[in-house]
Length: 64
Image (cartoon, helix red, strand yellow):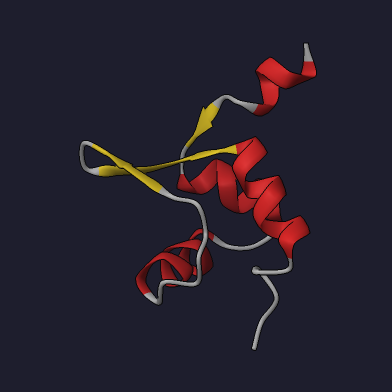
């Protein structure tokens, strides 16, 4: 069951809340190509929770 929940698409605000940052920070990461796994669907950025988890675990989310 948790696999299904973790594969749900979420928006920038939800992704920011999930990661514990502000939406402007997530937009900044996308703009600066920090490797955050974002997908453009129409005019909106969408994220999969499982991909965000993998991105954080990989260490790519660490600030340089």
